[in-house]
Length: 205
Image 1 (cartoon, rainbow, N blue to C red):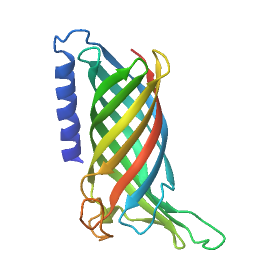
Image 2 (image 1 turned 45 degrees about the vertical axis):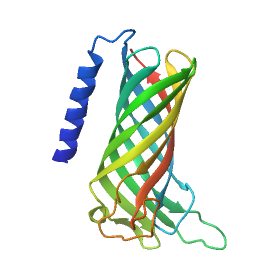
Image 3 (image 1 turned 90 degrees about the vertical axis):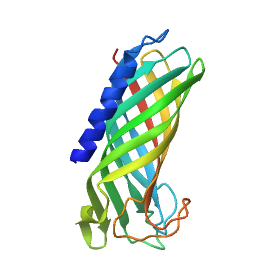
């Protein structure tokens, strides 16, 4: 937890410093965000973004010029994996990972109402639950406390206050310390968070 807090403080300091740079047309804004996630875990023999969750928090952004900018968030986000329950296979399997996450992204406005983003997200694991035939089990000790993800996203600006965002993220390192898992796109074995989230952003200032 201490290492994660140090990262949060460091990136907040960097962000505040960059927001004070005398760049033309620069603005500094902040607000609230909330939305839903659809996730899976690569390497667990399951497929499909069947684990639905919630995300919410605060954000701050700054513009370097009319096109380029930077944004950071501090939010709660649910990740994990789930198996659809069917008549053929009625067994329950749902892995839920609860994270506090700090994304830091660079943004590029490509049209009047469209903005792209790319960057990294640094996350701290609060808890990991497995819900199956044995009930809800706490598997936090089997997962790494930190996760670093690569982010790509797109914003659609509805008006000067509200924007809709679709974001994709994928872990850069395996998130489990004891579950070996299958081979993933990185050519390694393990479990990796793989998810989309759809959120609304409300600008206060």
